Amino acid sequence: MCAIVHVRVARVAVRVGDYCPRCGRLITSLSVKRRGRRSYLYAYHGSSCCYLGPVEADHREILAALNRLREAVELLEELIS
Image (tube, rainbow, N blue to C red; front, side):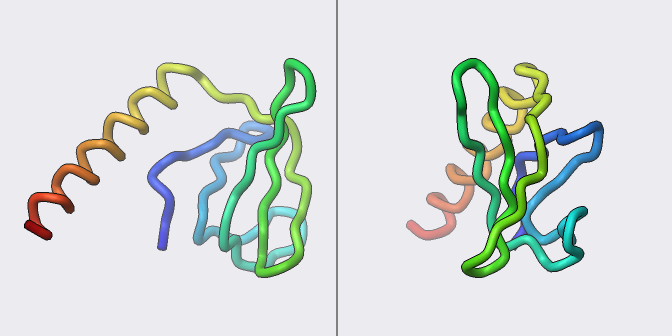
C-alpha cells in the first residue's frame, strides 16, 4: 500500500512503501508529531520507528494531495455501491 501524500523531509520525498533513509527497512506507516510550532516526521516499521527529521511541506502541495485523496475516496465509494 502506498500513500498518496508525499512529505518532504530534508528535501527528500518520503512515502509509505519506500525504504527508510535511516535504517533501510520498509516503511509501513508515517506519523507527524507537532512540538510547538514545528512538525517532525517518524517512520514506522512494525513496532519500531525512526525519527526522520523536521517536516518541510508546502501548503499547496498538501491541499492538492488531499483533493486527489478525496477524489479517490469518492471513486471507491461509487465502485462499492
